[in-house]
Every structure is written in C-alpha cells, then in structure tokens.
Amino acid sequence: MSAGSSLKLALAAEGGSPEAARPGRTRARRPWGAMIAGAVFLIIVLGTVLAPLIAPYEPNQQNLRDMLEPPSGTHWFGTDVLGYDIFTRVLHGGGPPLLVGVSAVLVAMIIGVIAGIAAGSRGGWLDNLLGRIADIQMSIPGLILALLVLVLFGTNLQNVIIVIAIESWPLHFRVVRSHVQSVSQHTYVEASRLAGMGWRRTMIRHIAPSALPLLAVTGTVNFAGAVLTEASLSYLGMGVQPPTADWGVMISDGQTQLGAAWWISVFPGSALLALLLSTQVIGDYLADRFSVASD
Image (cartoon, rainbow, N blue to C red):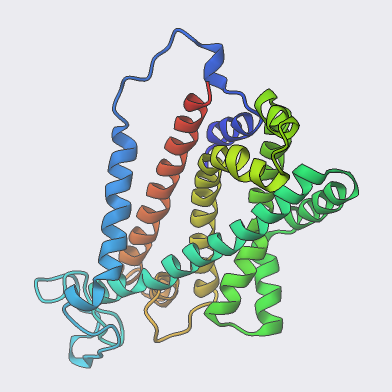
C-alpha cells in the first residue's frame, strides 16, 4: 500500500480525513483504475478456480518431446525443461498463493480484531502488554521469521499460513485498537452506556459496523503481503514443493533458463505481478473511499 493510503487509513481510524482540509474538492470521477484492477483480480481468481476445466493439459503432465518449446498455438506460454505446459501451470499455480493469502488474512484478522478490541476497550496493563507484543512482532523482518519457523517445524502449506498470519496480525490489532479507543469517546456511545446498554451490545451495534471498512483495507494490504511472502518462500524452496504448480516455484525453476527460455519465469512472474498490483490499487481505492465516507 502507498504512503498516502497508509496516512488515510491512520487518519480514518482516528475519525479524521485528509480530504476534510479541502472541502471545495469533489469526487465525481469514476474510479477507472479500481475498476480495471478489480477486473484483473477477478480474471486471475476465476482462471485459478476454473483451471481444472479450462487448462488444456494436466499441470504435471510431462511431454519430453516438447521440452523448452517457445510460445505457440499448441503451447500458448511455451513449455519448460520437463515438457510441462506453462499456461496450464500458470493457471493452477495461482491456487497456493490465493489459498495462503485468504487463509492467512482470516487468521490474522481474527487474532488482531480480538486483541484490538480487548486492548482498546480495557486499556491499562492489557493495552500496554498487547501493544508491546505487537511492536516486537513488527520489528522482526517477516521473511526471516517465516524462514526460521519453517526450518524448525517443516515446510508445508499449513505452516506457511500460520507463520504469515502471526507476522500479519499487528496491523489489524493497531487499527482496531485505535478505532475502538476513538469511537468509545463519541457521545452516542456514552449515551448508550448511560441508557444501560451492555458493553457487548454497544460493541456490536455501534463500534463493529464502523470498523468494517478499516478491516477491508487492512485485509487487502495483508492479502498482498501474504501472497508475496508465499511466492518468496516457494521461490526459496521453503514453501510449496515441486512438482506442485506454484508461481514462486515456477519462477525459481526458470531462473537458470532466462537467456534461452525466458517464458518459464516471465509468465508466472507476470501473473504474480498482476495480482499484487491489482490488489494494491484496490487497497488504495478502499482507503481513499473510506476516508471520504468518514467526512
């Protein structure tokens, strides 16, 4: 996510907006960038989900007679050193990154939201403790932490999801905690408490709905980071293992053939880049839209 979007997200969590300083400006334009990014994202997701139906070959189907074939009508994205069809494997290769991204975001969001609500509503020593833990967590480089955990506990997809979720929860925690602390001071929340409304009911009725747009933004940010981390780990041999189709694995397999067979790495790399860029643009749009809605 860009620095501008991060600023908007932080201000929105506090109940403010950078657009409030420019009341004369309007936002009548269509968000063409976000619409295009959404279309690209949807195409990638549908291509991955429908891969078993639309892929011309099986992902692990070898044809040694067609090794290192360049892109053609028979093999749209060419073949690799084992005769695998690259187009087929690019379609199937989006499965692990998307699975890891969605799963890690959900786990991280659950942890971060629970911890953020507890810290923001209770305050005191609990807030200090959870804040310190989050600060320490964010000070450790995520990829180094992931490599350490995977070396100790094994390189499987479940461990990849867990380690990325552990790496990602502080963002949700900080945003939710700040939001709870800010909204709890509003007059209507105080009035509901004086009227005898319990803490849980107040949280569900007044605080949780206004936090959903923030969680949509943090979820988008975490999703992109999780996808990139998964691809990096697979590239390094610590994530998905061959012969399973995965973009990170395919990029790694083709790096020694870039001069003679560029398509082995370029096509999965382009798919990964398209997914990350589309997620980035969608996240920027959500952050901007939320900041405007909060005016």
